[in-house]
Image 1 (cartoon, rainbow, N blue to C red):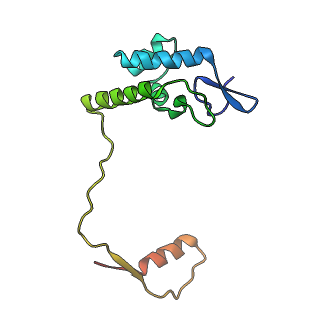
Image 2: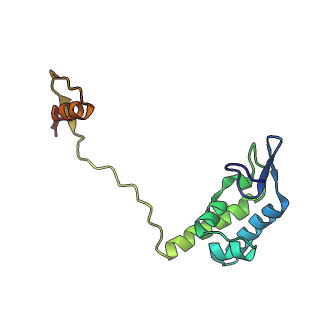
Length: 140
């Protein structure tokens, strides 16, 4: 029985993560299907799971399957890395690599802000905030 955020392929027994053999086999077959060319959703369908592609993607990107201090190993590093490389390749080929790119640092100086002394207090917090913001002066 799955509890909370326990990844597919594991069960918690006596406070420890243990491999659910049937589900772990499905996870391995999802990786194999995806690496053989199936889509995310189709790879899950081939192993008898009805999932959205985002759920399958989370399985492929879940590093717990590599094994850690709590979770036993289901997928080896080579398979995990190959699936991630393939996912990125497909994402780029389909034009879905839409993550924001880091913009280079500009040479425009940062603005400095200064606030004049406060002399009014309002009971309404919104009115107080509006008043305080009106006291801010910026310099280039």
